[in-house]
Image 1: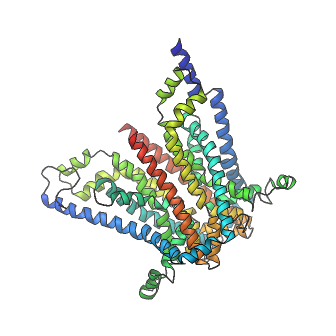
Image 2: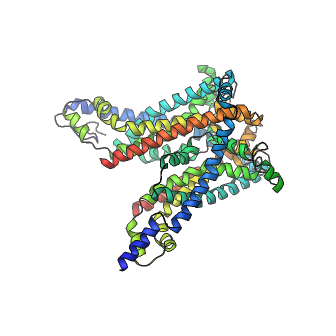
Image 3: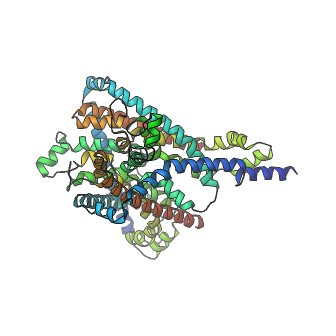
Length: 286
Length: 287
């Protein structure tokens, strides 16, 4: 008897429907609707107010088009570089023992804890015309980094560095070493083993980490606004352009690009979530 | 270091020459990673430390004596505390439901929750201008109640809550999913009620995850810039948070103060996240 009543009580506690869970569910739904869904809905409604034609027209103005293109290629370049360096960092952290490993592992997380505006301040100091490095770059190498596109890529590299490392690392740790050993027995070289055996097993987390970096780079503002110089047609990114439009109260322009950024962010998030769920299933089955 | 032995599974019959080469390669790879991380992350961080300390004790004291800075820090702390309370309580509830309930459209809800991670903070701030701004649907209600949200503190708070919303939920979903249901079952068998089970069994099991979620949310709220700039419009003495103070100082060529405040805020945020991470790791190991 006692067992049955405890079962019912547990069922009441753990499973819908029960009064407690219904009220928790209502609270959670209200919270998400008020803070996420209504504000996002407002942007969709506002952005599409004039119809798709007006939206497209606002996007294809040459100043907007240039900002979008700059945002796209800097984000792609930064996430591409961090895909390679993040994969390498995760590999080194999981497979090798060396002095300073714990420190390296801790430093990987630093960009996650540093506000992005402060990342911008860091690079401003490092590359500024008064700093030794900035002076050297300008006088010896004659390269303009600050207030030019290289600075945009640099801050994006800093901000997105942890994503691929932290996506790949746990999967690599859990990876079965048997196939690699078998390939080695069959005479495969180290690089062949990595390319044909290890890398395919890491493909899903590598892609999801890279897409996450890309999404973050597309929307990055605080670090970019300080170091890019924000010159229209040259170094002005989409997020910085939108901020200017909002400041000058141009709702049409601001809404059009904001809606595009929202659509891109949501699509990428859906893909990343899908990949993460799939790799969890694969990991669970193995 | 003998390069002939690697930590990799030794392959039988593998030529020793390959092992030597892969041993050398290993140090090249380790060196490349240290170089990359050193140049990309540690060097800029060091530049900030040097830049802030080079203004000297006098410069640092002068920076902190500015009443506008004190007001900015007070606002930042207040906004962060409110954000942690809102996202802590409601985020925990949402995580609880998402970890345990099955319902149609879960994938879309999951992606929506992660969206503030990927959405530009500028757009995040703009959302609340659309709703609460002068052209928004709530303008007349705000007028009749004589409150303003946009270009005022409530807007700063709502935007910060939006931007930090995923942190608590994402932190808590795996923690709640990994909970040992047997213990709850045992407590229920012994006659405990739902709230008692939560307080005496569930809460102690999730407290490190909870603390980490709070620390992440707080640190992120301390440093939020883009959304707050857009929705608050950087009004000194009203909506100017510490990051906005830094931005204003840089635009006014007051680099000394900007660097000092940037280092303070960065160090605060970093210390908060790393200390809680360290605490959690220690306790997880002990358990």
